Length: 343
Image (cartoon, rainbow, N blue to C red; front, side, top):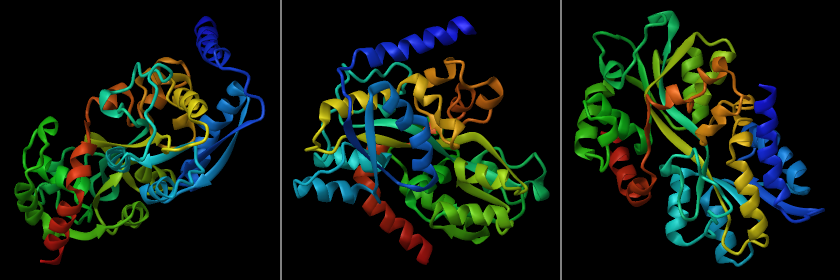
């Protein structure tokens, strides 16, 4: 282990050694604030400041509209921004980002669905099934078909009111292979949702709401983001989750078009997605590394890996969201979902 750790450190130091002298150089990093950005500071920004001898200035954003406004006004103040996967796909189509330099950014260990000309995935979160262990014990629903099975698992449900993710789980519940979801059969998804609609006590509109429904026991099972479920379980909620048929979603890194420090931003992103720094992420927040080689660094124990959504064993149980599909179809499918809920 000592030899392995020394080798790992040597790799990181070799990346840093290849960088020019950058003393007192500042990069501005924008993300979503809160616990997530605090975790990014500890897992990614602090180590990069040491390795690159730079300073990160931080800012917060609310989404793609903030980046769009800066780019269109030719007043870009951020060098690296963190956005959701669908926003990255949309922003790429709109020409809002600088191209990433993959001669600098190494992608070994990163799934091809996370690698795009203008964005790269930095963390995984998963939509999973969570259930109340006081009602079902540890043997709760293990598939979306189970979630839909009100005879085998009587009780109340909660699903997201958003079309994205909800249409996917509805199709898996109806027997669609997780690897053959796209393009989505929307009519079939809506018919599947109609079968369970009367058992859904809440169509949640935020991660916080889904977590509260699980924590309070208002819903016996919830389609929920794994980080939200993990937080309430740590806080004492009588609940459990499965990664079976989970859906990988992502946050991604971009360089807004017109950023002042593009070359330096490329090097910072290279370190953010490197195995060594990716392995830091689960220590501070319940999101998984997008670089599978993070699990080979020796920084994540087997016991820790068993709980992380993107560990090899858990990743094998899940499927990836198609961000290009949602880039092209979100508006019209949101209308279909809203109409369904109003029926």
